[in-house]
Structure formats: structure tokens, C-alpha cells
Amino acid sequence: MKLPFTDKQKSLNKRLCKAATAGDVQKVEELLEQGAEINQPRTDGPLFSAAYAKDSPSHHAVIRLLLARGAEVDIRNSVNCTPLMGAANKGNPVCARLSLEAGADRNLVGRDRDALGWAMLSGSAETVVLMQRGLEEAETPAPEGEDEVTTRRALGDRTLEEIFNFRARERISLIRKGETGPVEALTRESFDRVADPSVIRAAYRQYVEKGGTLPESHVFPGLLQKSSLSPRGGQP
Image 1 (cartoon, rainbow, N blue to C red):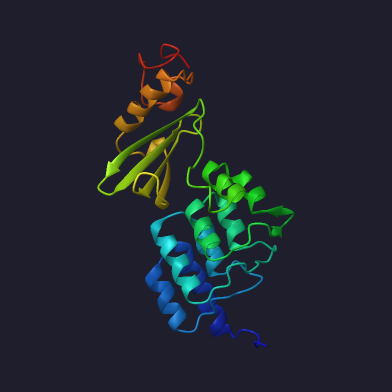
Image 2 (image 1 turned 30 degrees about the vertical axis):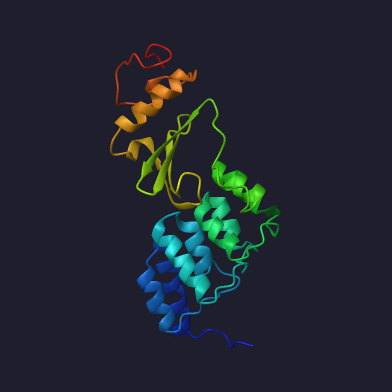
């Protein structure tokens, strides 16, 4: 049985969680070497912190490191939730996938919800599908609907898949191995943060051709006056 943490140990543990939240792989490794506790039950420990924070390559690396160093994949925090539930609640599908690959149980319940229940609160279709189907059938993020367009193009031996949700004004970009292989990286960003708006315009044209009804003034608020691309002649 472990003795209560000393003040020094508590400081190390807190810094470890902060580094995990930031996706700082090097700092996480340094703090583990200094004796920070990798498993911190009844708190938002490092694995929960990384899985909940952000679905970025650096956070994925932190999760892989923690799992390799012995992090308990189904450890519970103060409200009885697991890292998988945290990733599902935040809508971080790659973080969730890493937990599942390490053996996380998606049927566990925390605060009266299982991982699927938490994913449904996130608004992330890919995470919902992952929690519904598990690893076997969850490669496709979401079916295309009237407010969504998916584009794909080759990047060497990888495929860039971009999902444009015009109602949410969000682009989800996925890098797949091959054409239909597993997702290796994922980013989510609002249209406001997309550096090259021409990619959104091209997807918007496809959206209009498919019968989409949201006007361009909704998709690009404040950026355009009128556009012939708008299904409603540029009117909101």
C-alpha cells in the first residue's frame, strides 16, 4: 500500500498532469524519470489529462508514452470517469482509439454515462461511431449528410480526407494510411481558422451541387458581401 504523497511528490504529480495537458512529451518523460506518479487515482491524472486535452499528434505521443510506461488504461478520476470517457466527451477520436487499442472498456459507466453517452455530448460523429462500433468498423468518421461534404486526395502513400460540415462551420482533416487505412492523424478547426479559404469554397461548390441550402453568408459570415454560389442568391 502506498503512503500518502509528500508535498514534493504532489508537486511532481501536478507538473506531470500539466505537461500531459500541454502535450509536452519531453517534459512528461523527464517528470516520470524524476519520480512523478503515472497512476493518480481519483484525480484527472496524466493519461486522463492528455486524452481530454486535445486530439493532436503531440497528445497522441504523450498517451502512447504513458501507456508504454504502465499507465492504467481504465483508471478512474474523482467523478468515476476513465480516460476513454474523457476523450469521448471532448470529441477526441484518435485519443479514444489509442485507449481502445490499449484495452480500454467502452462499456464502463461514469456519472451515469458510458463512453458512447459521453461521445454523444461531444458532437463528434467520428467519436460516436468509434464508441458505437469499437475498433473493427469505425474507420469512416461519419456518413455524409445534407450539410456535409467529404473530399479526398493522395499525399504520397497517404490519403488526406477532409470533412466540411457547413452547419457547424468546421473542417475535420484526417491522414489515412493508403486510401482506406486507419487514421494516423486528425485535426479539427473552425472555418475561421482555415488559412486557405479556397479549399472551403471548393467544398462549398460541391455542397451546393448536392442540394445544400445554407447560404454562403452563413458559411463565411462577415467575409463576403454576395456570392452567386449561395443557394439563396447570397441572402441570409
